[in-house]
Image 1 (cartoon, one colour):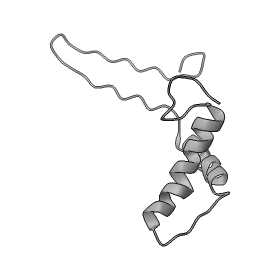
Image 2 (cartoon, rainbow, N blue to C red; image 1 turned 90 degrees about the vertical axis):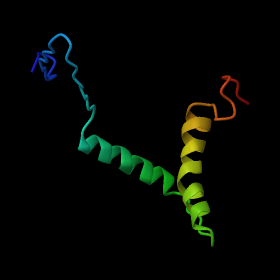
Image 3 (cartoon, rainbow, N blue to C red; image 1 turned 180 degrees about the vertical axis):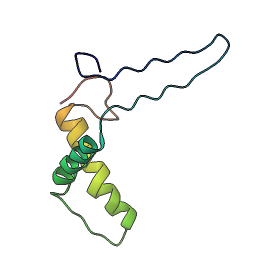
Length: 85
């Protein structure tokens, strides 16, 4: 590890050869924290209808879009120009 705590890996690729490098950022613990965060926020509203796909969309994706795009980022998929209001 370097002084910043980051791991270093040396990769040598000979001329004419190829290599694939996969960099994974984060950790399982962080991913679990993120999932818990969104579950707590999106779990505040729950809709149950006879249409299961509709329920999934309303209880998850649409709530996420409303919070992440409209409230926090002040934009939406139909409003990418940066204007709001």
